[in-house]
Image (cartoon, rainbow, N blue to C red; front, side, top):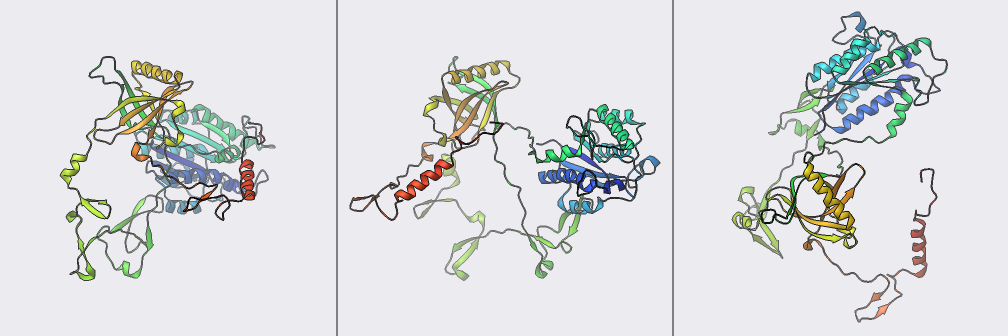
Length: 497
């Protein structure tokens, strides 16, 4: 399960953000929001209730926050409370972020409001807490309470990221010419704030460029098998090998996001009451969950229904509906359905015990890549077992030195179907392990014979080399040339090789 996240984005909406700098066509606010919108939509695409976020605007025309009664927290508005943001909430958030008519508002005070929001929402629970401040640094800034704020950020485990419009960044190689003295002083104050809490301080140009780098999704590994790797029967022979190991996925298939089916509610469906649901949960204006009755919801959920019918000449339509409980399992044998009762089916069920047993070894040269039937997994020794780590390392090095693979029988859980896997040694600089893929059984391999591609054999056994279904010499030569041109082994190399 992924970690719970709580992120608050602080956006500078002051009047100066409506100006254009650096020969850009868009305003500073529109340019900065490219980064913010990309981060917000990426979080929405995760579709996780534990990936929450909030949005705070400062240098706004209004004051809407819990600390707004104090003068130092004026012109700061909470635009989105912390919670899971969905697309309807995102559509209502966009119009709220616009350039205001004031220069008043303190960025440091906005950070305090964000800290208050995170503390109220997360309480003492385990969250990845983060505050992202986006500003042009042209407003007033009060840095008197920075030591107390940095101490609070560190004690609560909140990561602070400050990204400025045209901020100087020597590491990135950007420096704004003819910078305003007030902006330079504000940049220095924000730099002190981030350095005090081990935060991140950068310029907007670098942040937007890094959006093109693919975002890696960090997942917490879940073991598919945790037990012993054996060679021989340890219950009968003292010389049998027995190693405590754990098995984790190494490569996983990324599935596309699932979608729900909806239809436009018709006049008939408005008067029809559903027996399955009487209300639909939809986001409120702030993105939180609210309830909308069926009469108010313009969309109707598509419900699936399944019926079972048998042939009955006396019933209308020559078919009669039956309950699923009245049916029995049958297996097709030719054109005949053969019934197998539950008691007979239990006899055919193979009773197994969880385990990983090596049943043989094969040389590297005898294994064909097409025999891999699954994604690869990694097998490591039990993390806190030094004896198991040394034993598995010996096995890995032995397989590598002998240029061999191990073939093993794997049962991940009791009474689960066994699979045959191939164990390959993997030796890296910082770790050693076994990589495994599933192998086919004999019944999984099908051999088919196809007619030759370069000749036609007639019914009488005569061989014909020129036929309308055979390629001509010109076509064969053109295809050969086409394949040769797709060979990239002789292509030119760039600076990276």
